Length: 122
Image (cartoon, rainbow, N blue to C red; front, side, top):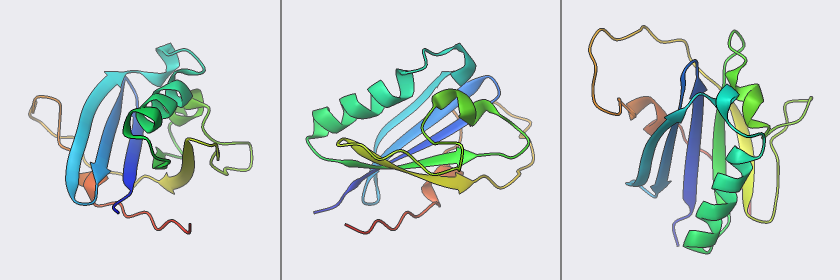
């Protein structure tokens, strides 16, 4: 059975969400800035997706040392360890700096999120 992996990429002005089952994209979304969201919004979203698919999710949270937008999601503690709940387990990954693109592409390019691999010990 393939596990569901959710990648959250909080950025200045938006939060990208990619949910995959194996190599297949199940959900792609661009949400508003995490600073504008309720403190429990990310946790509630992950719990809802877990309940919808009736399985525990593996979550990758991209963080950037220069940008504090990932702090607003409240999915990791002061030591940088990801939350573990009945519904999901968060792994924290450091984002690679990338060059800004000059064109607009609908909801955006998710190739960088697909390249992340999360190994989960169950």
